[in-house]
Image (tube, rainbow, N blue to C red; front, side, top):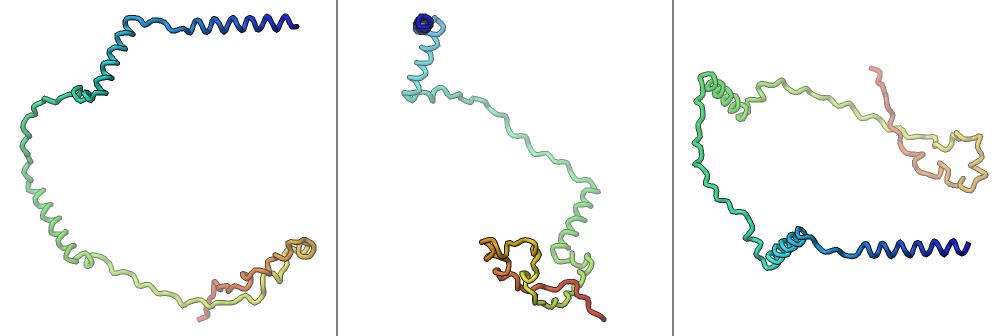
Length: 162
């Protein structure tokens, strides 16, 4: 077994050597050297602040603006405009209220009487079959300990005999 591991380590060392040798830098081709030189020149120009000279210049000469040309209103358009303006002026002067039906009169019913709950909620034990009120340590936090059991209850559906 020791020879086997030694053989594996030799192979690994040889592969690492081949990988290191194959990763050695190669010389640039003519195209790559030209591209590097062009980039270096542009980078130096930018570093010197001369890159604004590369901005395009707009030398376009624009034509004169086209004159506004509208069609004249026909008789029916002129009549519609006049009718709309009259209705608009009438509404602005407050005439819109005369064109509407009167608002309905709302009657508000009398307030319902407040009925207080005379029997606390805790008086009715809905869980009588469960011994949590007496045998568990959290029994002290039963519903009867909270004040909402005596809050007022508003009676609903009260019908008055007339």
